[in-house]
Amino acid sequence: MNFSEMDILLKKSLKPGRYIHSVNTMKVAVELAEHYGEDVEKAKVAGLLHDCAKNFDDRETKRYCIENHIELSPLEEKQLFLMHGAVGAVVARQKYCVEDPDILNAIKYHTTGFAGMSTMDKIIFLADYIEPGRIHGDVQETRSLAFIDLNLALISAFNNVLKYVISQNGLIHPFTIEARNYILLMTQKTYEN
Ligand SMILES: [Fe+2]
Ligand SMILES: [Fe+2]
Image (cartoon, rainbow, N blue to C red; front, side, top):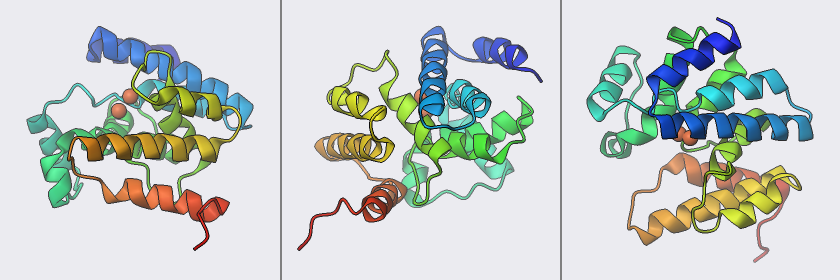
């Protein structure tokens, strides 16, 4: 399937607002990939398709998880919307014929992050978070860091996400904490005791 066929199919599958968000994410992902010397074509496809399972309701998400042997933790059972990443990777492979593991991984983990994220994973996570349609709270700080230091921008995004979830008394996915710790340890940005 070529890119314009993917685009047509995605547009048919998503609500208009979600499709616009997907195109915006794709554009920022391409800019970040150019800036950080990553594969622009992969960033383009991953950015466009990252939310390809976002339109599924909980029942459909659960069905995909069962049929594709995606095990759900108790937290994920309660927060099935987080699974549109993992399910999205399945849909990207089955419906959009994407085979590239870099693209599929970036789609899979764009909702939570994970320890050991590749540059492509970071680019998609960040593009999704800072695309111009996003006007949530502290996005500006993250946006200003995105083209300066990818890791610092990621930390900023994780901090904002965690602060928000805590303010809502929500459940925190362990992958997000592990992703944040991993980058902090890797970049030695932790505070000394
Ligand atoms: Fe998403
Ligand atoms: Fe998204």
